[in-house]
Image 1 (cartoon, rainbow, N blue to C red):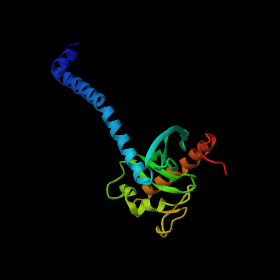
Image 2 (image 1 turned 45 degrees about the vertical axis):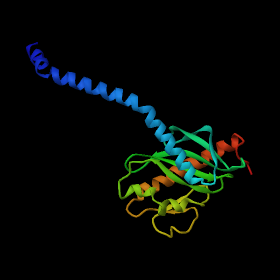
Image 3 (image 1 turned 180 degrees about the horizontal axis):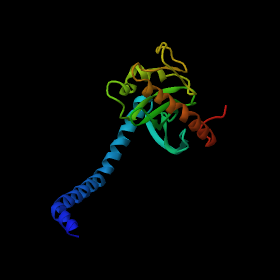
Image 4 (image 1 turned 60 degrees about the vertical axis):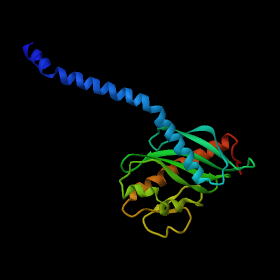
Length: 204
């Protein structure tokens, strides 16, 4: 008992400080959470606009469920881009999957018939600076603009200027660049099928 009493006498200040610090972190997170979420929404809207620049308005239509390769259900928000005349010019949705360092979350855009990619942008990523974070750069992302919205094939070498279903990996960041392809391959067919089931796309 004396040892316990001695421990308490020697460490009570540390215990109280740790408790107060933890409480402060919890309060701060609660206070900033809405703003952080709103900033993420604003960033998502800006990215969709950059991927579908002909769009005049962007409306969230529905939520879709994407099953990860490990069987986990992930929610994907579907947005419809319309022109000033009210015509659909394309669709956008957020999808995610594991990268080299952490989860990668992408915003993906396709044309109105879901035949071709309009491109993708990185919503959140903690990939290695100077290497994996090159998935954000145009020279890699441009390979997806106009590529068929179907299963893509990652390759280590080739001509990245050729726009087709083959995607050339980033030198020194093969894992991160392949992760982008895997995220798209896992999600695109699932999302397209659900959109067809909901009558948002033609089955033809």
